[in-house]
Image (cartoon, rainbow, N blue to C red; front, side, top):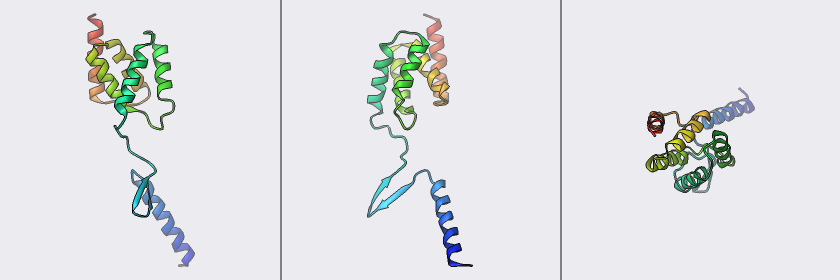
Length: 132
């Protein structure tokens, strides 16, 4: 086997190993710099409060709410799932069932938050909204 061929195979193996990990880390000295970060909840409370403020000021039409939610997350690199879940919890505590329904349906339409907790909250909101 030639030296260049074995280096090429070794290089491909290293790339495959990097792709298999959930995080790519570039080491500079003793400090690690993470190029891809996992979801963090730091700051998500402020994002959730911002979302609640934005949605609460809107009329109840679906198009207005969905448009504002799309603008809210437009500059995010990942879907702000933690902030959206916290906003759902805030709406639920306030008894704003129509807003719970709108935000949960928007999340599900984006393919996010499809958990038993989200569906449970959504069914509860449908039930409470019908009884109003």
